[in-house]
Image (cartoon, rainbow, N blue to C red):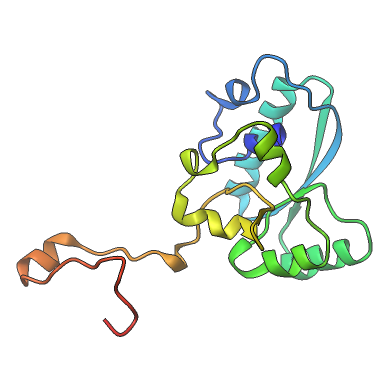
Length: 171
């Protein structure tokens, strides 16, 4: 869980060591699979180096996938060769992987360490990390499919009420 928190939003050069704490128990070899452009690769590589520096005895192997990530991850998982930590579009794929038993339920660890994810992450995004009342991941970022972004100035200029949480697609 300590390692996963390293990839949380805001994991930067200035705070990765602080997030891990003074006595990091994480040790061993891990693989971390992710997708993205060269900028994403550079950012993830930096965070991996920071996690390894904060946790002596930890070695993370980056698996940067520039191909068909969803198929590649499914193949690795189905063949019993899944990466230890991986990026997953939770809003689309979490139920599939959770029901296959491919994900570790983090709920007991969150309770044991008394971690309140809603104080660290956007509460509206947390459902993307959960399935069946259990937490299976840490939020890296939040998908925008569940957000409504609007220009207040335009609404004000037309004297239109701001959207509320009770709005539906019909509104």
